[in-house]
Image 1 (cartoon, rainbow, N blue to C red):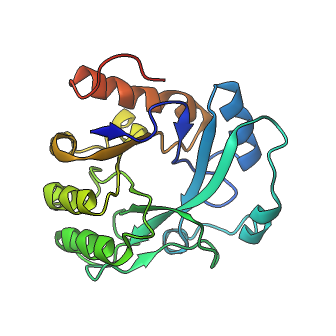
Image 2 (cartoon, one colour):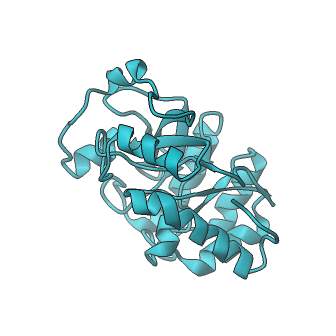
Length: 227
């Protein structure tokens, strides 16, 4: 099993500018440099998620093209945490109509998922088949949001086929929102994983990714020092 980002790189976090984080993009980037991160991706929720939860529009997405890091040498990408919408594998991957290059494929409880959780595996498999050339990795596939309904073995095997990494999510581990049995099944066969924070606060950006590495080490999936 390969860890795609074993060092000071974190590819999943949220801002207050575009979704449900507590900090601005500038605050996140400045703090990322202070804690030694070299590369980050700010991956706010997609438009279907935002609309379902009635988040107000705070910043115009198009202005991202004019943003520059004036604080430090942290490399910054802007992505989206996309959502599977139904068992057909329809996916919302835009924010205000803008589709970035970095796309995390995730699911959350209804809404934005439009069907019973019992169909979620079908949704995963169809979405991966349809959009595998666009997906950078799967976000928190072992979350508790859909209970026992995710066939994580089938999902992981299809990700392996298309060389799509799966995520070990630090925030979900830290807040007891991970189905640990599913996580162990995933880690037993996954070819590639990302270890990300999914930070919504600066404290999470600093701490929860380390908790994810600690979990992997304590359960025998990695050895030696990471980070």
